[in-house]
Amino acid sequence: MRKKTVINAKPDLKNAALRKREPIEFIREKLVISTRLRNEANGKNFFIRTYGCQANVLDGQTIEGILMEIGYTQVDDPMNADVVIINTCAIRENAEDKVYGEIGSLKALKSKKPHSIIALCGCMTQQPHIVSKIRETYPQVDIIFGTHNINHIPQLLDEAIFNQTRIIEVYSKQGEVIEDLPCHRQDKAKAFVNIQYGCDKFCTYCIVPYTRGKQRSRKKEDILLECKKLVDEGYQEITLLGQNVNAYGKDLDSKLSFAELLEDVAKLGIPRLRFTTSHPWDFTDEMFKAMATYKNIMPAIHLPLQSGSDDVLRRMGRRYTAKEYCDLVDRLREIVPGVAITTDIIVGFPNETDEDFEKTLDVVRYVHYDSAFTFIYSPRVGTPAAKIKDEISMETKHKRFDKLVKTLAVDVKSHADAYVGKVVPVLVDGLSKKDGTILSGYTDTLKLVNFTGNPDNIGKIVNVKITEATTYYLKGEEVNG
Ligand code: 5AD
Ligand code: SF4
Image (cartoon, rainbow, N blue to C red; front, side, top):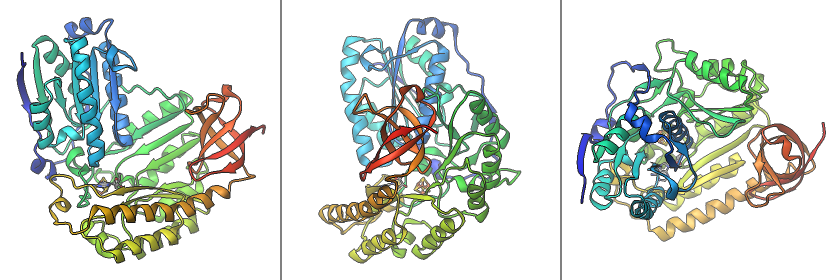
């Protein structure tokens, strides 16, 4: 029998695109957990799968924290779970396809445990056409919630379990800044810390400004408090997160800059401080100077290019030219010598010509990236670019993509080769996924290293002599001192 569906709020892309002038609300949240839900959770398990970017990973950690506070225990097999959360990503079609595959396979859980609860959240659920599809095609999904109401999980679970209803609660609003929610970090050495939520840039291909709301910064005191706690707990690395970290503070009354925040966090003494993502817009020399001054700010920057053609950049709404981008790279390298630069590039934006694509290759050859994420453009419903009639075939896009990957690989390998024979500090993550006798970790420039060494040093920074380089990782051996 189909359950009754209760709709508390449905997503609405138009509303999600509004940027109201009202000030952002800062909320200090105490979770409201009913006694019957606490009793219900006793001895029960939850499973969570998170897709997508670091913002989603951090949301996933908040959801874990909330479920644990209710009383559930985390398991790593969905078939042993009483509550399954699928934290989705909507950035490209293939990310969405994976989620549909996973929801399909969860039918087996419903057969095994009819009273289990399946909940869907994240960026996919912020889109009306996806919520309709889930409602119609996947009756096994009990709760659909969005990126703005993670704090309501206890109420949603209570309602779904005790009233035996399906619930949809997805707000399309600019969003608040909610503090004091629990966060469960499995990694005891590396932590993400949000400094800013949402995005106001509205690049014409991107769904993020619709799914994550208005750009809003956390207050500096709250960020510093969280970072200080992590330092005191012995964390070795903090990555400050936001869609456009260099625009941090512009929306705050204090008009604090990202450079100032970066310095204040660096002063807390965390051994490694990183940040992501930077938009080539809103950059200041102060930021670069902070990177050069504080040795614990890692010399690595992710600077999405997207395209090297001025026409495509204009149509993407990126608001910089290829020349401005390259000048920025020059300035960065001048102030922070040896900095590793990585990027994101989209191939096959609607009606990208061969000449446009060649211009992207020109920038790639100019910058000599340390590594890059490359994507074939994926139309996103509701974004301006998705309305453009595209004359370029998928075959052409794939050919360009392959050429881009080959061009990038030359630089990636030569950057890697330069490490051979050097001794570099590596923060040890753990045993390599492929070989249990090998450790893996990252250099200060965010290069993956697989090496022989002492497993007691997992979670610590050790010196590793690099013996070999491949395009994908470095090989080495731990050395003393
Ligand atoms: N199609 C392909 N790639 C995209 N990205 C964002 N939106 C799309 C899209 N519609 C890429 C951009 C961004 C990265 C996180 O994902 O390169 O920087
Ligand atoms: Fe998307 Fe552009 Fe915002 Fe990045 S800056 S999240 S690409 S809209």
